[in-house]
Length: 192
Image: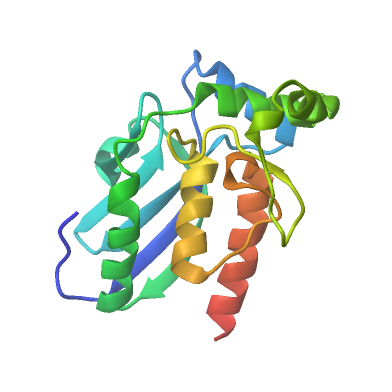
């Protein structure tokens, strides 16, 4: 994305995928008990509005107009940003574009809410995926950032942009996790 030299808005959004074939979306909505299945980041500079999102088959940057043909926004949190902050956001987001979508990660996150034992079983079956995290205890790495889903893209962005720390590896951050964290950030940003 090429930015103008003007202030704008960073938007963190949550959306519904109305496609009848979006079975992964329905799995997430059901498992997490939320009315949306997708999160995204939008950079808004008036006439120029670009969405950054991890969708099948790979993460991408797409115009808001085109994106709206596929998703219905449910809720958006707006963060006013000056020219410097917008450039910083785009510098963080650009390297996250073009990364393959992680279907296994989507299934694991969805099923861990339905079957709590799924994650413990995976730890036993794939101990080589365990990595120590001295701040929060051990975490389980599905695929690092070699593949992404929307929550991981957003969690990685929030960590780099605003210094957000997550209780788990971003491979396992849920829609509910990013919604709650976004709301908290928005409240702090609004009150500042």
